[in-house]
Length: 132
Image (cartoon, rainbow, N blue to C red; front, side):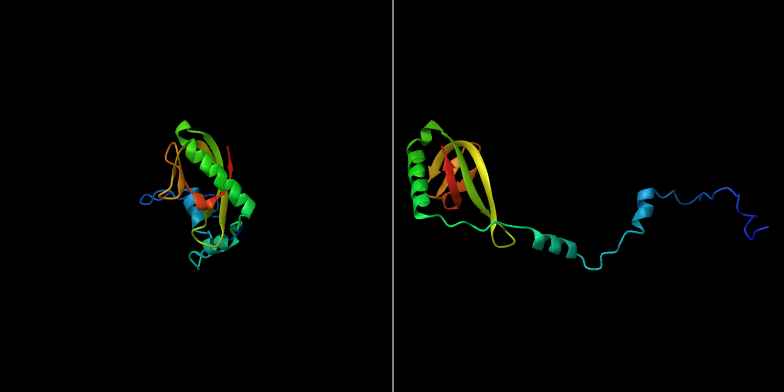
């Protein structure tokens, strides 16, 4: 006869005062403790890659200026334009090149930007390429 044979087959105890804990809450009790708050976020931020802003050649800049002048003259026609432009990263050096397509509303000379239908605004100094 074993030491615990007298209690081995007793029914499972159910508390009358405390509700049953879910499996998720029970598992959370044993999850790892993060002693350095924000450390994982800092590591992820450091590992995140950004693109460097590309320098425009004189030919490329001349081509962009010609296309912008053309678009300025034809803005009332609401031409469909695809623009590749640079978005500077807010947290580290570099940024991201993205593409946007839309109908041009106007070239805003005061803010030095392209304004599209729907309100999207792209600074002319951030533009890398324009497709008409």
